[in-house]
Length: 321
Image 1 (cartoon, one colour):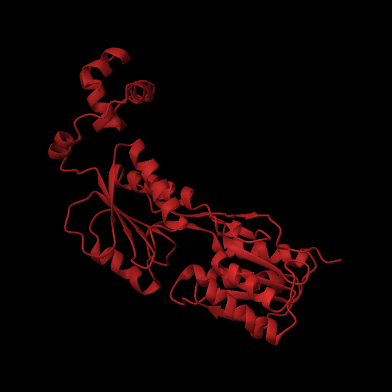
Image 2: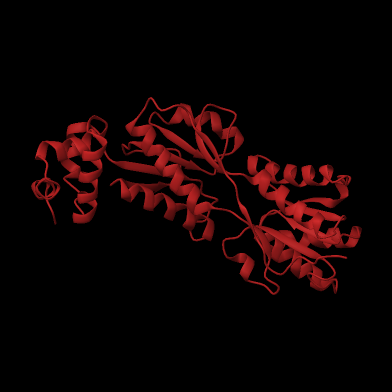
């Protein structure tokens, strides 16, 4: 493994300059800094992290707080953590995944995911180190979120432009999560803009799993003449397709069904589900990059960023004439 002297020799600078690039990069000229950083990456130099931590009182450890109800084996959690891991490793930070509020070990910063509206005020109360939130808040908290409103709006608009007017929606039954109502409001906005009344009888709230989608789609199909069902997760959409089959409804020719997530579940049925694909990996990566910036440059102004999702077009939407 390369040492600091080898990095200095290869870059044509002094050992002191290499040390400054690592510990105080802002005081090094951009051209010199980029040259040294390139050599560090090429030689895979990691330095003595333990010694640096002792001197700087920094751990170079990040805590990633993910609520218990979010399963780490699901694609959502796996993609999210992968994005964080890739961004942190580039800057020689490590991380620990925490499942509760109590952090007995010191860290340099926190990435929080799965926080409800009621818990948002606790972030500043509980955490004394720089913290970034996956989601968005009315409070002064740095955050990165997927634009759930625009995702649901775009999908509903796609259904309308495909000739559908009687569009039901199955909403995740978790009223304390901002993204839930962002998706519902995106659906409502698209209907309103196209002169289609928002009907309360076409709005159903269900548990966020296949069974929840199945039961709520049964209600929609039994109580109305929907030609499309907009589901706010792919798990719900899987259940909705099963309900359509029970009603002898062909998907998509009789009833179109759409989802939201695009992390793999949309491939588990025939037809494959047209869905809103969440850029979860990118969100995790940007959260980690934002947190590092807040740690290394505390004067950085607050940042609240939205990442726009895209529609993943598959075969579950029928174009009506």
